Figure 1 (spheres, rainbow, N blue to C red):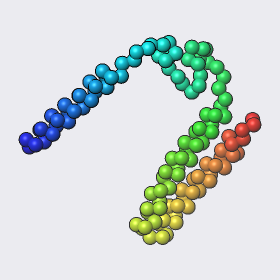
Figure 2: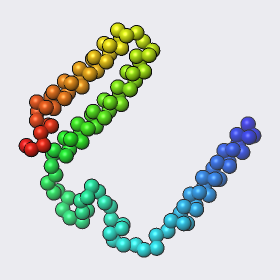
Figure 3: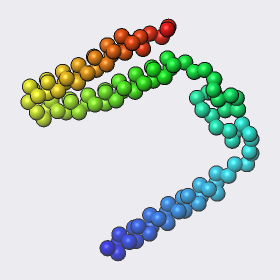
Figure 4: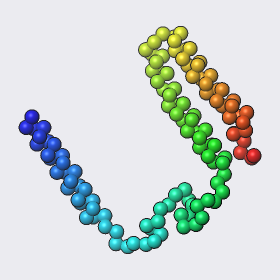
Length: 117
């Protein structure tokens, strides 16, 4: 119990020393309006905020995120193949891939995949 208390105190001391050192060493010597201004997505934050933005960029981003998450969900299905029988794995995989294919068909049907619209 005493060792845990010493380790906790040591950890708190080391983290505090590191935070104090970072505050001391990271002082900015030159403050500029451009350096202090936020930078977001290539837009100038000092201009009008309501500039037109192409909806195609947003749709492509959403489609990418959806398929990226779905690909991340496919990996446990591979692990499931080793842990269960072939029949359950086949039904699960086909159901999941059918959802992917139906989603892709819906996006294609709504012309979300066409860039020139």
